[in-house]
Image (cartoon, rainbow, N blue to C red; front, side, top):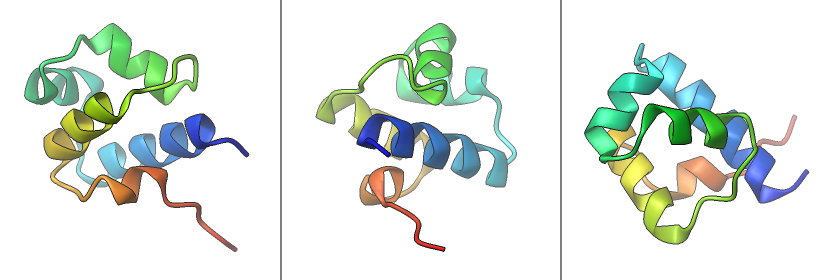
Length: 71
């Protein structure tokens, strides 16, 4: 699994855990809802700057977005 996919899974999980919509994350991060959706689908690779904006919007440490879960 590549980090783009890991971020997509973690971002979606964290957003759902916080009961937020993609639009709310977009508004809080200053990004478009379309771009947030593309990240969550693993269609785009987010830069470190974007990683930070999304982490701030979700109120989590950026590491939480790229942490690989082990069963």
